[in-house]
Image (cartoon, rainbow, N blue to C red; front, side):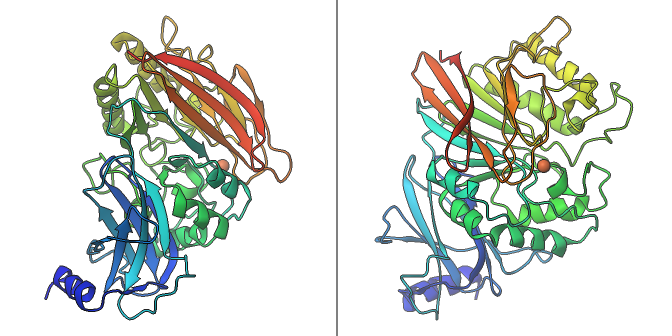
Length: 436
Ligand SMILES: [Fe+2]
């Protein structure tokens, strides 16, 4: 008897099943579109006889049920990945893990969560999202509760999700790192109610300063695919970069992997040296060409800052200046418009209105760049120069960016505010792009 028949029997004869109290880590959701989503949760045991109930009503009336994917032989059987399809656009959904044989416990919220599907791609819609990077492993900082309180459509966690600096090519070490992240109550509360978009930086991809030579590269790439609710990964190889893209309203988000394909930062900065690798660079260019003018606003998500001085000798695009100039020339030549860069890594808030984003041979592309971090680390200055001066966290302070996209049809207004765990504004930048 196959798994889906078993599930059908379980839901038919044992229904109403119990809300599973077996979810030990998570759940967290991601890969949100207008019609689909992915939920991942780690259970105490193999994800058998477990299903997800999904309903647009908090009381789970008229719930649909979805079965977990069957894990591959080399994947952890207790990590349940559930792909939800056939959903309605722009609709709040509630989900909960259920299992036969567990007593219903209405007070047990550990297995429940919520998300809102996106509007139909290309439709005029206003929304807000949050982004930041750099939280101590398993951090319980109040900043995560503040991000949740802002009710963003998604939270882009764009590097240093943990600081395990894993050097061994050991899958269990990466599972354990995600366990620690999801073991934090304040992070768990955030991820249960706000979908994530996750790309890594060095400390969570591998060791400090890691690149494609990292000894833990393969395990890192494999466990990302196993444990993280992510958009379809565009790379054709199973160990390709975790580059992915999605559409929210009339904004296209292109999320880069700035670690797993990059050359060593110390390599001479010439035409061979790459941050993205040849496949990912070609993909980025295809994405930009496809998005240009179809979507008035395009966010390029780079864990490390794009706006950065070549002489800084820090671990960002300033040390890949030849490739950055190549891409800048290409964007100018192709007439790409409406781009905004998002970055983390540097433990500070900062912004540039585009004046310093001037890396093409005759100037340009002059796209704005927004910088937000750290969630829970002490401050550091990197990158720049910035038109809005960097703001470091006070001791004990956590910082994130909140971006409000106001689509007025003929133009789209973008308001970026850097906030702390109290919701206090520390920095802002506003700009508009043409909507038609
Ligand atoms: Fe960091």
